[in-house]
Image (tube, rainbow, N blue to C red; front, side, top):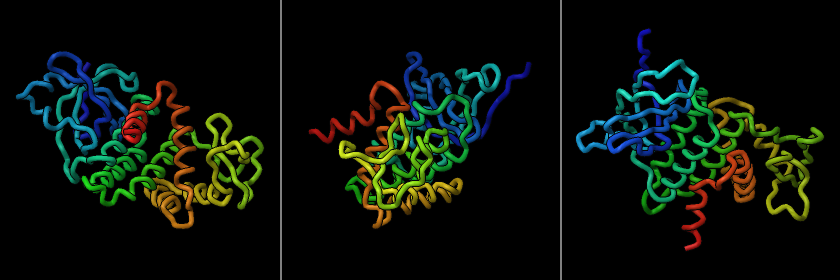
Length: 265
């Protein structure tokens, strides 16, 4: 049986860890193959051509040979890696944000489950992260970008309920009433004990923005979240983070723990 080889595949490295004294295992997000695991033999050697290329949050073109049949989630052998270029490595808060997105994809995506629209969205977000400089200029753009990505990620993998009706009863939301998004119960009317909630009108605006597809949805959601009339980014952040952590399971996302530790210094 001939060895199958994948070539020139758009990809990003989500995580890397040592496999031996000289090799690495790479968890990669690719456009046509989804999340794949690759072994980069000899990549830790100073003379390896892979060494300066295999970095997170950088657009790459990868080639590998398939181990076993497609869809079996096996570890494949990396054969080629080329840096595409186009933006610099994110720094500071933008770097932490990028690593947070990587961890979400690692925890929530099954191996070799293709999500091409999500890949394109991720690539666009990483480009935005690369525009935030060491002094935090343009850093105000980070929060809306992260919220939009979180919403579209949850929708793409089927974990986001309808945002224009109460989940349990399918009752349409009242524009002026407040509702909270719960990990186990979806959207319901907020009570005095709920620490975070949005108005029905705000949830409806988000649902409307999510109706399109691909870049159109991202642009529409970003416009809603960043809009001056939204005014509830912090409360949306708390609810989405709780929902994402619930679906990621234990332990706490490492990047979130790191962010909290840095904020407490």
